Length: 109
Length: 421
Image (cartoon, rainbow over all chains, first blue to last red; front, side, top):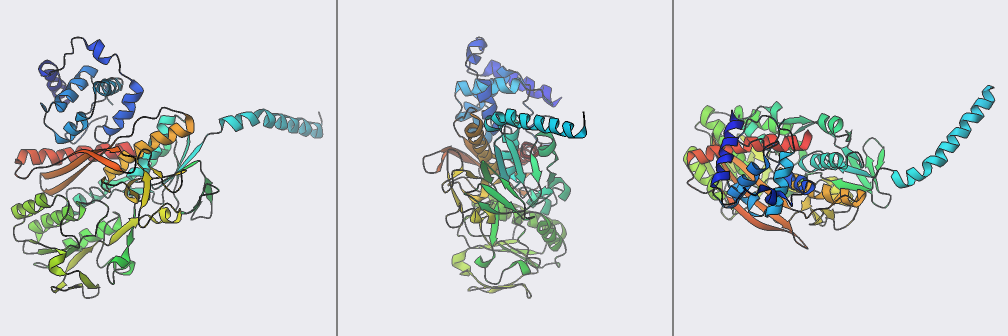
């Protein structure tokens, strides 16, 4: 249920966000999955696979467009969370694409 | 074939194998990384080097304890928000899931020239790269008359484990209406908000079980981490219970009498019914003996976390001079990933990415009242520099504070999974 809510919320940001994903292939064309795995080191200090007692969602296996749009929403401060805003603000589009493609490649458990 | 000729035949085979094996030994021997200390820095570095090299690097972790109790969240155990078992972790995942050779021994000394780490048992391990993540050692002599002999009367409880259990027991059994004295350490030290979160958690206990108890903080510092947030929280949740006394007012601790539970200062002699005394700190002893410290801590090259004194040694976490990065588990975990990437690149030729560091410290002031401070960092030429930072705001809503606490629970699960799974 929690997963469904997260997915729904993130989908909403795809529609609301300022980044156009209708040409998603272009956005992700420079994605570098090995770079994404390295960058993900910063994420997995908090985000883990499997179920969680806390409020930090499992992002393994989540669609790349959803992850990218969530990061953009934190970057523009449309989404609240100081930690995530700090993480997102220094990511460029290549890094966001790389992270998104890396997390999407994982299984959720 | 006679026994003799069979032996001769097998000997010939062995010689042949040795000759055949020689080139692969020369060109294909696995480089070895030895990591000392199985906390947030060392466990993370071990895991990342082992899993990311997919067996190409031989990783040995030297850690004396078979079960690791985290310092982070030990205050929440004190406050009754966690049970003790929940902050304990073992090394099964590192050994079985990641192929790390886990050696439960004390590292006693380093032979830098021979690239050898000596162990308490008398054995030794050679290394290509040595990662030191030993945490802190306590400078008992930073406080008059404080020593390991009296730490059961006045626990420091700053390296988790039984000291924290003892402190909780003493707090729970303190006489009604008694006085608890907290002596925070001088800068720099492990976990800057830690002493003040500890006071918050003890106040939380007193509020329930000993509401007329008092807490006196004899601080050697004139200000402290998240000061405004903590003091506002104390006024809100524990009015009249906590008195923080700055060094200009008390003039310094002149003497500690553990037998009488007294602290003599210029201002007064404070009598405690229970106390927590945290002395000054320096890098774990092995960093001193490895010759990588300058004064109390080990300077590093920011881009790789390599020691400035020995290019084959890396220093992580509390023991290192990480400039504006605080001495925290989150920082150590972040630094470990930078070092792991650099070490693997040097030993196996794998891709080396630009270093990036981050830290967030969550503290709990009272039930569902969480606060946080965080920053991200980059490797400058001489030191690790802050890029941007944030801190919780005063007057945040109860919902925001509750969400901050819940976020910290997720972080605890995340980082311990990242360290040990």
